Amino acid sequence: MNMFIAQCKAELLRSLRNKKVVIFSIGVPMLFYLIFTNSAGGDAGMGGTVWKTYYLMSMTAFGLLSISINTLGVRMSQERAQGWVRCLHVTPLPSSAYVGAKIISMSVVNAAIIAVMFLAGGLIKGVQLSLAQWVGCGLWLLIGSLTFLALGTLVGMVKKAELAQVIASLLQIGLSLIGGLWMPVDAMPPMMKAIAVWTPSYNFGNGTWSLIAGHMPEWTSLTVLAAYLIVFVLLSSYLAKKQEAV
Image 1 (cartoon, rainbow, N blue to C red):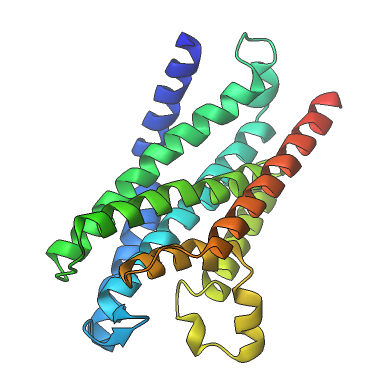
Image 2 (image 1 turned 90 degrees about the vertical axis):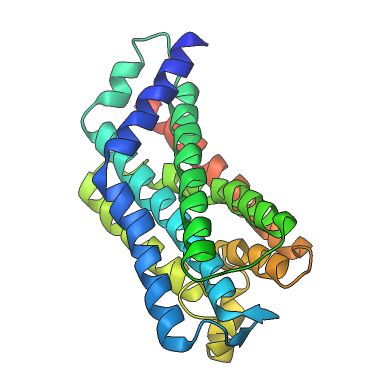
């Protein structure tokens, strides 16, 4: 247990010292949020609420998706390519603890991203929600981000870090675009919209969009996120065992 706690602390420190985490996971979503709420009018109606509130949730979800896939996935791939994972096999720390420490440390970082984005929305743009809505949205985003952390570990199974970076970037852009995090799904063509509702990114954002509109998240969103989480975990476990056997 002490080794696992130490590993969690080490992973957390690595994440916090990484400037890319701050720039891309907080800075970019924050910049997009400020630009598009200013240009489109923050008080315009959208999804049963106002645009500045709706887009705050979208950009927070985008930041969490980005760091979960890009930072975690690419880092794990780099460590795999450098032989770090093989070195762990000669230590008392099991592979599951290695992955678990990364998930926990990244979840702490994700919680910080949520807090910073919510504070910015409230203080800079005057977003107003009830305490229950703030907490509900924060918990939904934090728990829902586990699906994308699982996807990040799947990307981390790629042996070549350069290829992992390309895959992670394509997933980040593709899921953000088609999932309605950059622009509302209602503005998409019918065919694209039909695909979007089955993506993990749309259902990730949809839970918060429901909460800020005064509704409970749809069971469909919870089910879809859970299904993707299970699939990503199973695939990652299968590939990890297969690579260890080689």
